[in-house]
Length: 223
Image (cartoon, rainbow, N blue to C red; front, side, top):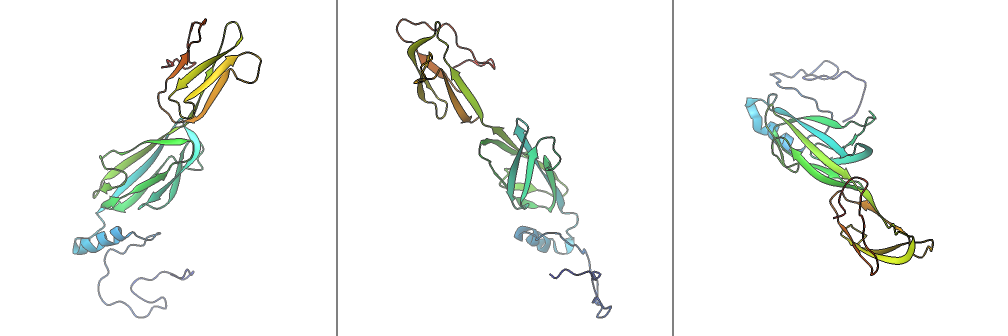
């Protein structure tokens, strides 16, 4: 459609001629292309009318922890972005008024994040959100940011003895540490980009040594 500065006329030409003879009902102008299902809903409504068959879908982003990361969404509601921080540049939620029908929303999960849940308050899956006339459905996408786990060895006294470790942390299945000034082995292992979850680490105690304590700074057990 050509964009002009001319007045919009419905039922006649812009020059005031060729009036439409009859009745025009439920005129509606959209600022986007309707989906096939939306057009079909209008056709199916027929003489019953379609104005009352509108509902609202609300998409909410919940990032754990709150973060300025942008999250991209696609699907029947169009393309849009959300984040979960105090900066107003991007919203945390967005609302869509749509005709009653079924809609899908997909999130592109950014690197370093995990999509841990995507639920709608009416029980619909986000791949088939069932919107009824006059209904408001809120769907929340929850993502957890990947973290870092550091395993540190403290030998008393400092010693070149090697200590072997095993774990179920991704990328840190087995490794060795010691606690001396020789840089061949370090006294700490950093496991980065770890999905949110519970993990365990175990140490093989060398002969002549005793394990006196294992602590995590967040209070978690090492198991």
